[in-house]
Length: 183
Ligand SMILES: [Zn+2]
Ligand SMILES: [Zn+2]
Image 1 (cartoon, rainbow, N blue to C red):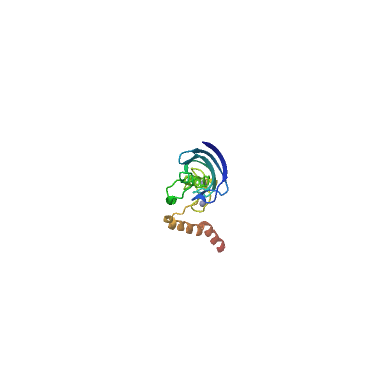
Image 2: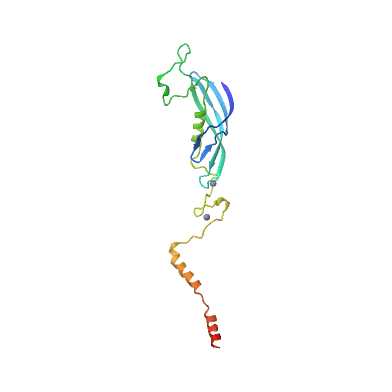
């Protein structure tokens, strides 16, 4: 058994929906490599930085994702004398990953583990109020935000109200003016 700590850059294309691991960002891997009959069992944990947009307000959100991995990497098939032999069912879909030229390629294992954990609708905070549906304002920055709602059922009454204010005249003053003209 061997323990291993590695810091490696993330490769491109680690994302799902609104969240992604930026290409080139650091991945921290704490691994245990165990020799088993069929190959090497790799288990451990990793930490990856995730950048996302909040699904409600579209503001950037960042967090560290931690996950466990475990994968068996098998030795390539050999004959009795230890020579590698080519087998026809090499491309079998469910076949465990193989150790190629004494190297274990963890990229697919770690990528799959992190992408599966990415939320479909990331939130900047659980109670994010999102954006105003009328004007798109950030409601978190403007808690009292709102718009005067005009109910179409009151439109006729509003029109009457407008008419009333426009035709406003003061009967007393009108009479007084008439009196002045008479003088
Ligand atoms: Zn938000
Ligand atoms: Zn608004």
